[in-house]
Image (cartoon, rainbow, N blue to C red; front, top):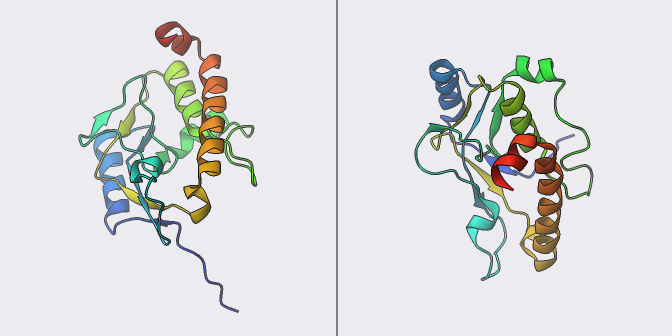
Length: 167
């Protein structure tokens, strides 16, 4: 029996080669790059590509305290994840629940408990993510932004360094 999977992400042929170069040159604990929207259905006129894309600029760089690699295009050193016990299972998408923040919470934890570890961004390490039709509705947009705000509050309020620096 053949199964057809809908493509939800596309990476250029050199994606893994670039990832390996980043590992060899910088040995980061966490690294990633931008992701850009692609569609398999017409988008509404009001829907901008930027609503479903994420970039931290066009220059490769170590991330600042207030910059985070997005879960849409991210790598973690396996030994690091094993050492800290992985992601917080209470965060992130679970079933139909719209939830966020597992990779952001982990980056905050690494920065606070292991400040010597490098978190790195490279715009050459890009991918494309499918924007499903249901994600181009006002209802989804409202729910997504509400959920993102809720989880951002929960994640950032745990961090004493974040609270003291930015609130």
